[in-house]
Image (cartoon, rainbow over all chains, first blue to last red; front, top):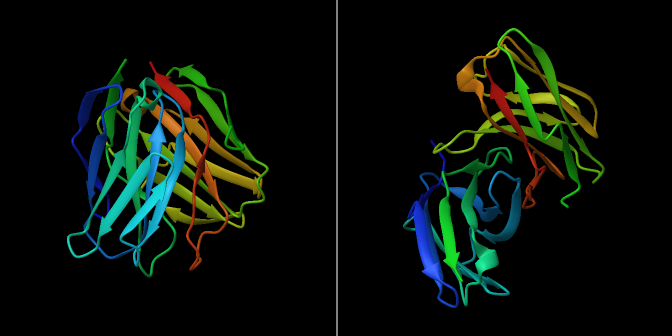
Length: 112
Length: 116
């Protein structure tokens, strides 16, 4: 399966701390994306990193990609209570159609 | 607001009922998707439509029947469901299905389906 797997499954931190989530996948990819989902709602795209990129920033988000290890990390700096949500990585297979394969997500709780 | 709207937001149905989920996007996207999200499982891609043609059908039981009458609308017709079909059903759209460009998916808020 191409599906990404996030680690840890759940993470609880204090407001102001940094949160790091990891994603591993199995086959060659075109891109890797991170999405956020508030409880029982739809997913919202956060950031995309291409397979030839190693690091990308967007506001308080920092994403890294290591294609040799088939892994990615999402760092949220200076976390806020509003960051409480589930975070998913999604990959699309190199040379394939643009189907996105998601993992089970990391549930982040930021305690005020 | 992502530009993808799903109705209804919540649905309770009996195993003998027939119901439909609706998804609408006015983003000018060419591809639309149905995903199933069950607790503690990865999102499951169910169906993909590209330019109103079904291009993916990932071994989904026939009690789920998709329909894409035009590029802006996608339906999921449900009949004789089982309790294990209870889940959050998410619709998504993207600019293209097969493309060398990076593809972002825009998701609706989902329909929380409970089969009793």
